[in-house]
Length: 67
Image (tube, rainbow, N blue to C red; front, side):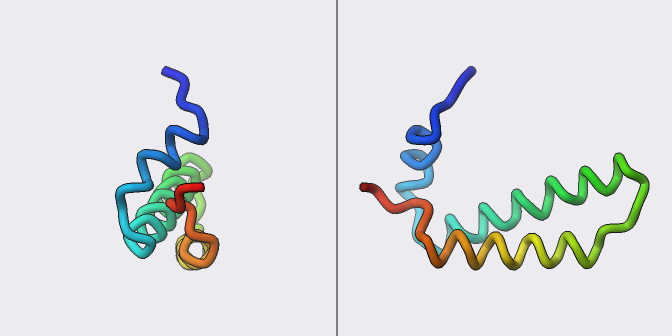
C-alpha cells in the first residue's frame, strides 16, 4: 500500500483549509505522544509546541490546495 504525496494531498483536497491544518497538527502531536511513550519521557511541552507549529504551518501554506 504505497501512496504518493499527490494522492495524500488529493485526499486532503476536499477538506477546508482550517480542517486540513487541524488534522495535520493533531497527527503530528499524536505521533509525538507515541514517541514519548516509547522513550518513557514526558514530552508535553514539545508535543504542544509541535502541534501548534505544524497546524500553523499547514494553515499558512495551505497543504490541501490543488495545483
